[in-house]
Image 1: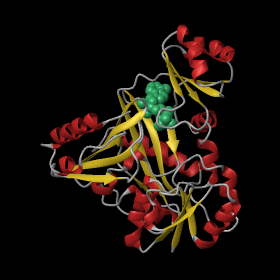
Image 2 (image 1 turned 90 degrees about the horizontal axis):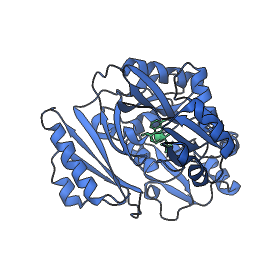
Image 3 (image 1 turned 30 degrees about the vertical axis):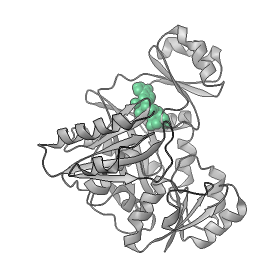
Length: 364
Ligand SMILES: Nc1ncnc2c1ncn2[C@@H]1O[C@H](COP(=O)(O)OP(=O)(O)O)[C@@H](O)[C@H]1O
Ligand SMILES: [Mg+2]
């Protein structure tokens, strides 16, 4: 069976690496001539909107999926006429606009931060008494890794913030004073089988994920599962889905969802009986899903803008390195490493060593 993927970055590569043992073959469409997943299958080089290449992708693939959430919905509709595409277009159309996304979540009874749509500096000024400070201004579309976001501490920040977002339609949201950030990842198959991963506990810096740790028996696991269960069913979702959450006391507040495999789930490659990547492929090919049981303790460290020498990282027993084969650029995710151990004893120490190495090579 051939899986077509829109995008040939690191997520596509990890999907392909997970799919090969299952006998799956891959074809990627990505405009970058040297893309990191490309040597794991066939690479169609060209624009995502090129009808000739899209037709070729649909003809050569049995099932199509994607690795990024900004795929124009019309492309999914075009491909779907020939070949099934998962996750469904609805997940994209809802998730691509932060306002639509938050309204959708709220309608399902999933709590979000207070928010308002704003499309001018006047709108923003009018919204602030209700939203309060601190607050975050975010472009409604196309934001990722904290891009297109400005924190507002007081009235004095308003006009600079509005300039920074370049007049784009935005959402202004209240800053959630969270104690922890977590994400729940789950996979749902064509037949409707669902597998939930244990919550991942995530640390961000400058809006970019740095460290993701798997949790055990987290007191909020059940609540998070109920949220993502509702979301999966409302979207008639197929594939792996991630829901980012803020924890305040014993409540969880949804931040956003990603209709794809997620950076906070990379530890599942070594740390779960079945990774988020394998379960995504099982889900879209309608195979039984694999166990999401955690194997010991694991945490993933991202390397941003730079990566420590492999010799240094691999000198740490229990550390597994994933180099994405991408050119280093300021703020760009170019690798990650997972620490996985059987015992809790040296786990914190191991994470500390990994984080220190990451900080020394970081360029963000
Ligand atoms: N309303 C908020 N309150 C507190 N922190 C926030 C809020 N919104 C975003 N953040 C912080 O910024 C990070 C990135 O924001 P997010 O909305 O997830 O955008 P992106 O699409 O760039 O991932 C979050 O993971 C969180 O750490
Ligand atoms: Mg996010």
